[in-house]
Length: 322
Image 1 (cartoon, rainbow, N blue to C red):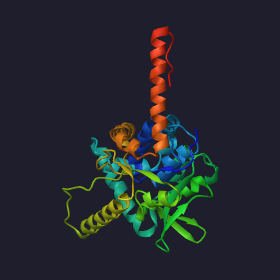
Image 2 (image 1 turned 90 degrees about the vertical axis):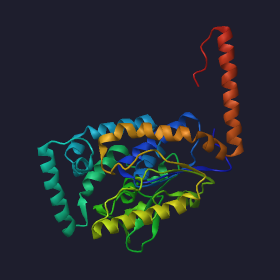
Image 3 (image 1 turned 45 degrees about the horizontal axis):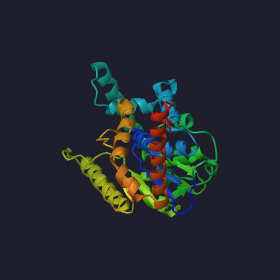
Image 4 (image 1 turned 180 degrees about the horizontal axis):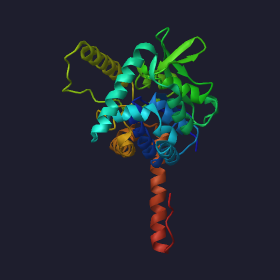
C-alpha cells in the first residue's frame, strides 16, 4: 500500500566497500515492512541506493556484488590491487614486494594524472550492479549527491543516466578521475556531504533515516610528517561537517565498520551482517520516528498475524507466512 502524507527517506553515506553495510540496513527495513519513499546517496551510498531504487531486492544486489568479486574484471582491476595494499590480512614476502612496487607506481602516477585508478574499473563495478536507465525511471525516487570541483558546490543529480550519476558521486578525489557533465567537473559527493541528510530533506523527505559508514577517526594515529598533519586535519574537518549534517536526521544508524579502508574487499561478506545488526539495534527509534498512520498499520499487521497464527494452531492449517 502506498501512503500519502509524510515521506520517509533514507540518506546513505559514502565509505567505499564499507557501503556494503547499506545492504544489511535496507534488508532489515524490508523485513519490517518499512516503506521507503525516496533515497539520497553519496558515493557507495549512491551505488547501493541506486540499485535498490531500480526495484532490485537486497538479495539480488548481494548476488550481483558476489558475481562482481568473482569476475575477471575485478581480478584484473587496480581496485583489487589497491585493496590488497591496505588489507590487514597476512601477506607473503612476494606479495609485500608487489605491493611496494605498486604503491611506488601509484605515487608517480599521481604526479602526472588526475587519478591513480582508471575510471574503467569503477565503471565496470557500476555496470555490474546498475541497469542502464534514466534516474527518472527508478521505482523509488533517487538522488545522487556529487560535488562540482569548479564552483565548489554540491550537485544533486536526479535525472539523466543512472550509471553516470553514480560514477560522478563515487569519483573519490585523487583515486578516480572526475566526471565531466556539461559545465560541471564532478567528484565524490563526500567532499560536500558524506551523509546526504540535507539532500534527502530538500528532495521531499519529512523523516530521514541516515546511515553512516565512514571510518572511525583513529585515536592512535601517527602524526609525524606534514602529510600526516594535512591528512588528519582533513579527517577532522570532514567529521565536524558530517556531525553538523547528522543533527538534521531523525534516526542515525552507524554500522560498526571500524577503520576498514574504502578499497579493502577482504571483509565484504561480513559488512552486510554488520549493517543488519546496526539496523536491528535502531528499530525502536526507527518505528518511533515513522508517521502515525504507518505505525498504526504495523500494529494492525502484527495483530492480524497473531490472529491468523492462533487460528492456524487450533485448526491444524499452516500459518500465514507473512
